[in-house]
Amino acid sequence: MRILTGAQMREADRVAIEELGVPSLLLMENAGRGVVEGIQRVVPDWRRRRYLIACGRGNNGGDGLVVARHLRLAGVDGVDVVLLGTKDQVRGDARWNLDHYERHYGPVHEVPDEDVWLRWKRDHPAGWDVVVDALFGTGLQKPLTGFPAAWVEEVNRWRSVLRIAVDVPSGLSADTWEVLGPTFRADYTFTMGAPKVCLVFPPACEWAGQWFVVPIGIPPAVLERAGELVWPEPQALASWLPPRPLDAHKGQFGRVVVIGGSPGKLGAPYMAGKSALRIGAGLVTVAVPRTLWPSLMSSLDETMTLGVTDADGHWSAQALEDLRPLLETADVLIVGPGLGTSPGAQALMDGLLEVWRKPMVVDADGLNVLAAHRDWLERLPPMSVLTPHWGEMARLTGESVETVGRMRIRLSREFAQRYGVILVLKGYRTLTAVPDGQVFVNPTGNPGMATAGMGDVLSGFIGGLLGQVRDPVAATVLGVYLHGRAGDLAAQRKGTLPLTATDLWETIGEAIRELGVGC
Image (cartoon, rainbow, N blue to C red; front, top):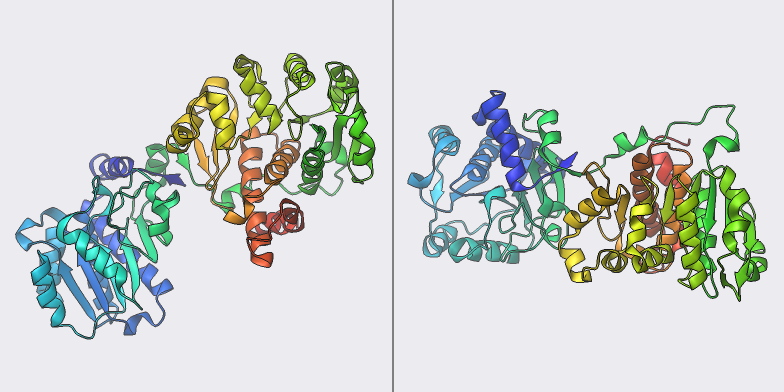
């Protein structure tokens, strides 16, 4: 499913109406009817509730009028409709629905300013149980002012009221995740055709509540062509991880080598290696400096280990020769967890970029080494997976952390396209940018995962899947999704505050089973 801006959604509407001949009035009808179907799912005892439908002068207001009509058709008596404006300002399909509603169902009350609103509201002392916001939709580009701003701020203060937004909460722009100004705080948002940017990313998404997509009759192929942001859905992800044959053997599911570790950072490669096994890799070897090797051997069981030539516990330039026998048979490298940035670590990365041409996951200190030699980015094997957080991305690009946060979609896409890699920019709504220009937005994860070691577990999950799923994009998107979902399941059991990275080992199996695979 695509995530669209307001402009992209309007273009999809245009294609459907002008090129495919879908009547615009039908799209509006489907939108309003779909909202009512959603209300029936989320509003307890919905027929007995009292509804206030607040409509604007444009198409979003037209959607609201269809909502009001279908509530009345479904037997709801308590429906009040207000127009924040005057009827002579309403045009097109919205005007048709306004006239139809007044002709058959009752009055639409004009409340063009605060004085009229206050007088009208005094005539309805019983109040309402549900408020439906159909004021502005996706067309807003500037902060609300005047009476509309005062109206949404007042409604936000009402207690014991369920607030529902049609398409986009009024006050948000569909084109950005920034909050422009006064905004309707929805409990539920029913959005048309595809989710919008403001519903997905914080801080704007905090005003949208739980959102649902309402199909309105635009063909899926039109929506797929409309934008590059992808919201992965579980049913699609499930097809990327096929069930194992009965005669499977471990050699079929990837030989993964983790390269990392330095004094004080031995836990990172340990967690990456264990995570690769937990997600189904066939064989995993963790290679660390020889001085640290005994400590690792006492901690790992199913995972194989290798101690390589070191310099007082740090990586040395000679370590590559010790790794060569492993590299000849390995399918996947995970480079960087706890690696350090010593001269030996830098020499090792330089050597790996000369000899290794298969998938490589680069995380943590591996990214810091690349940031110190940005020209090396050109040497990465095609479709390598880089997993920076915002700070590491800033070092890789030379931008500030603030710029990375503000421009993260564009920077991720450009980076992936320039270097031919898969870029996983970690954070809430982790982005996975791929060389063809698509950017996948991860729907899973929670604030409890902002803790040490989560990145090492993620690199292990992705590396473990790369050995099983031959499409690197599928392996990466699936790894990011399952990592977040395992974190969500762990948080449900333990809460977010006590959550640790290794808790995900207990729930990753359940996350996989939810997709209907690995059963």
